[in-house]
Image (cartoon, rainbow, N blue to C red; front, top):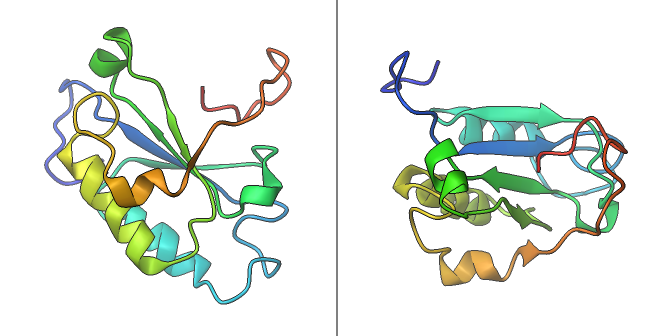
Length: 129
């Protein structure tokens, strides 16, 4: 459990990192993939996912809102082409500020945001929506 998160406390927003066929692989060059996951995982709840079927956006990070923010209407934010340590740092800062629904998406991260294609329900067990 990340430091500062107490058992029984409301779940904070979570980060899903795609690591499968393209994301996190040698296909995306010039990125220290392990360092990216380490930076995100330092004190944030992170889940590593199988392929999210948006390989053209590798590396993909999905920020899921907290349960309370989701109930209030916030939706996951999909970020693609997250291949720069500064972008990873911007994601960490936004999640620490509360993430979707709790804190506005920083303008710089708007450059990475994309809408994933719709899927047939149950098509992927890794679907973070």
